[in-house]
Length: 83
Image 1: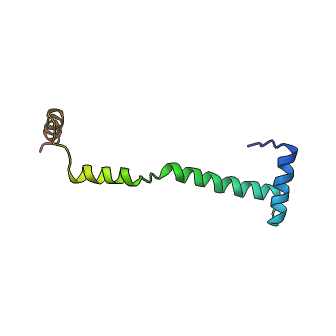
Image 2: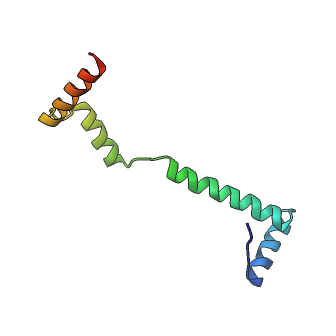
Image 3: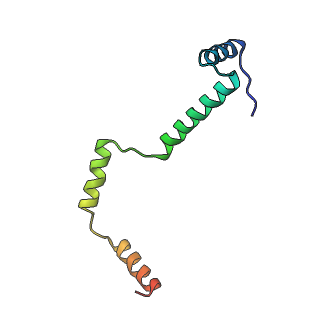
């Protein structure tokens, strides 16, 4: 991967790296990894809102009655599974 920086950004990165006693390459590598892990985590884990959580639990506690299509699917599944 190649990265092109403006002169101002390069100086900023070098200054930040120097404050932390690291090379600019190490600083950039560390920060990119940290941010990439953060973004992946945000998209990998769903944290429902309180309203979403309440709606989900309500649906689990009080599921709707099975309609004709669901009953047929269950019947077909049982026939195919030998139940």
